[in-house]
Length: 306
Image 1 (cartoon, rainbow, N blue to C red):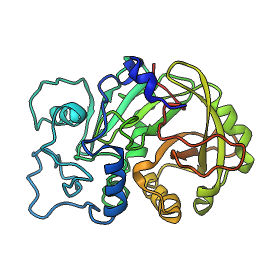
Image 2 (tube, helix red, strand yellow):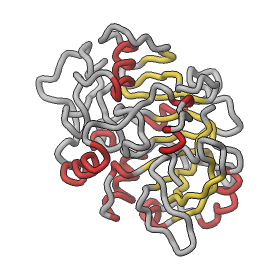
Image 3 (tube, rainbow, N blue to C red):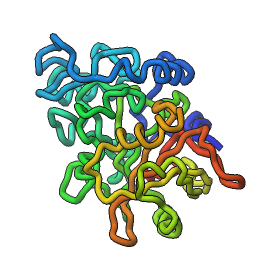
Image 4 (cartoon, one colour):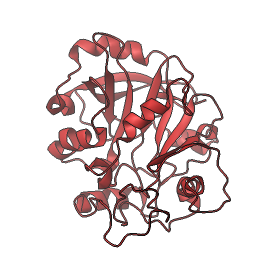
């Protein structure tokens, strides 16, 4: 079962302005990632625009503009989130006129599309297409995951009012992702998922090199609320001080010969043992043990928005 048909039938209210996927389509994006993983590593471009120019807010380094990571001049449609970020940063005039919940030199916090109190987005101030942009796994990139977690806490602009928090990033699949600007979802995590993770805890590794082989079946929900199982690689980490994009690239993507564009990442607290976090990763072609459900390119089975 995929999530695309649900959206096609009008089930899009929870992320109504998050339209993603580029002109290349899924095959083009995935092919670019396979061919150009090292060619758009990022870092600040020599002779880059001044700090107050779109794509280079504050003093933060940004990726080298490229077909893989995007161009600061991209606008409209599937780049609506990028337009909104620039309006928040004051480098572009509206419309659109988003509600900028927090604006920093490296990211902004926006409301998600559902209008609920557990649906927010962290969006980089740099022009970054999505998980396929190699810059996000380099030492120059901010720790967007830690910032997302901090902003989801009580008293913060993205406070997720829900029993448990879930953070997530979708793959680059144009049938799934709805905006070609990187965004981390700050949301709830569906009821029952924490219990399932607790039940699997004794078999979940905390060794990154074992993560690629640690595959756990989890029952989540479709956008219509129908239970559906998918398989995820699950890792236990003590904190979010490390860049999870780098961890994914080095522990899963490179060793397996996969592409970053096909991956999803999700984070939720570990409620047993000495705490920490579970990091869940999947992809449509996930090689699963016999009898287990397949993988997925969307975090929507896990996260509760509306």
